[in-house]
Figure 1 (spheres, rainbow, N blue to C red):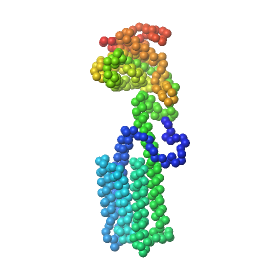
Figure 2 (figure 1 turned 45 degrees about the vertical axis):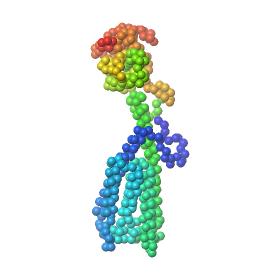
Figure 3 (figure 1 turned 90 degrees about the vertical axis):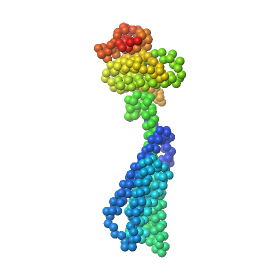
Length: 450
């Protein structure tokens, strides 16, 4: 697997926001996740408002005698109503980006308004609001925006909160021109309603730094998530080209696969070819040829998989399937014979594509073979090789000579169980590439015309 970042990274590249190009199917999945994230944000905000309401309800109320009314419950109510509206829009998938940005601004404005209302409710100078610990909830609202890894939402929340607090400070120091209540004494600031400009600047800087760091971290995390999404989608598609067991090995391997890696194992090979398909395809439109093959493969592949076999290759109108490599199959010879009979029954029971009737020839052989990777460092193919594999192909071709459908080797017959299947001895046959005659058998129900 290639590294997530180049080995040499320019220091400024850590701030890069360029994301990998996402395929349409991945973008749709990301969009669905963002919609679910907005629903979660709405639910958490409701919990946040409920928490504030509970704290307000439990806290002792000592309103000032000059307080005209209690605004906090009204602000909390308005905040709750707006959050419910926003949650309803998110739930019905009608929450557009513009509405999200607006809701962020409204969230911050309502929280700042709640803080501002304290000095009214408690009949205190406006500077009283600046001492409210409710300001800490600003960081919660900013953090909520990280759920969908959208850095712009986080930055918007941070900037809105900073501007809101600056506006509140400006209001406090200018509401009474005769007494701005500004002090340079830190002790006086802590023990009175005085305003320490440095402390308020610290709050604004803390809000901006928190939002900035969180936005950067969220963007970098989003890049990793997007990269992983592309890799996952690619791997899912590429896994269709190799057996699932090989794909799983590639996914969990500690190191990259290399050409030449393999192992010798006792397995059974099924080699299948469609009889006369080349001549048939000359009389069919190209799309019908492809449709017929795909229809046949779609029906035959599950029969092989049901017997714990694995299709290693599609070779035009031929199929190479293995049993016990790479998927474990203790009774691999019997399973391969059963799969061959299943496929024979399939072709006798139905037509394929635009109504084509197909006849197959199958060769089955059992023996030691090498299962592994062939190719170059840039392009690999998982396959099985060896003389036993070649023998299966020779047996398939031998059907044409004897008018049979399924021919198996002596090794397959012995391993599958001579008493379990109707094997008909053909005799010892001299096959191309072998120095000595090979005893072969036709499967009883696999004779042509039966």
